[in-house]
Length: 462
Image 1 (spheres, rainbow, N blue to C red):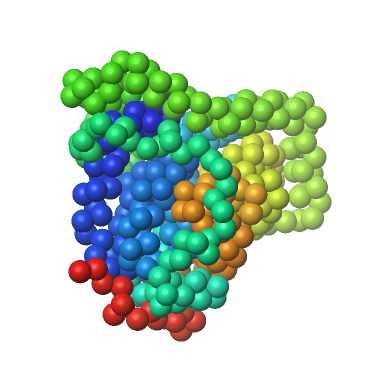
Image 2: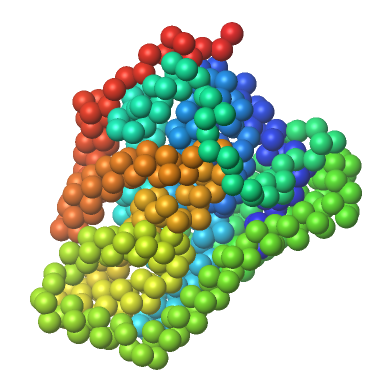
């Protein structure tokens, strides 16, 4: 809620518009325009809703002038929203993710930090990371394939014909527009965001500080990991978020960009924007309690044991099942709420039955944590009823079905590459330092030989 309030304040006081105005000066061609959109998607990492609505709504006039199709804009916006928010360590997602992991750790009586498990899982986050790289490669190589190529070819040759777009679904985007009287200044957004990010890091170190760990002979990364493992992530996030919100209000009032009434209304609007997420989280906790009382996890564990399934194959299965649930429900958060209480206990018990060591079991456990998130994001990208997919269409003023059609081929391509060349090999012991270059090489080859190049000559701005 506090991060949601901060997002609205820095949008209302012109801070976000200031960042966009600064970067838009470098959008001089179709390629640079797409790159700026991608970069903004990375920078607005703290919430996927804010990312989608702010970046899509503000970059649309720029991309229209540069003859970039609305479908391509919607794809870039959608593919830098959830992938970034799901793996960044200071986002509106992190509270939900940590709560699911923490509940499982308590049930399994594991003396591990939820934040530590989350950090360990990041090295297995193949789909979100490769999606970001895939989008960047498409932009750099000026190539597209499938339905996206045809929409981009039409936009390059005929321009973006707004009249041909379906009538935009009514949606209240005014909360994500800056006030008319404010002068856009980038530092009004950058300072509060920096307070949240660095405040969280400082909080993790402060609450988890242990002189014995720091003075030991282990490596620096192991020391940091141990300190973060001892930290109180809730206190760190809550105080850093509150600090960011207070700083954003102070900056707005001191410069007279907003009065106290407007700032208060902005905070309330930010809280309202998170209401759906809070309801999902509350219901998820209820569902987790119900699943625990029904011993569903035990049932799934026994079912898996009877099939003699290898623990190393669990991340692959988890990704597919999570993707299917997210596609069917249109909710990444709902998918995590269903999958985490079921698959994590089953994973730990199956690893134990297979005679794996504690550290090896913890590695598979972290891998499954990441594939639940990755599968949820993948299914979300493919689903026509997904909230972020719909918001991407709305913010980009794009035909929704066209957005789904053009994005689907790209999402499936990345998912296949990450499953075959990433998830499976790593589960059987191949190093991440090997699979990442292989996956990047594969998507480069696909774009090179399947994609068709756009002519850049007609896309320059005077």
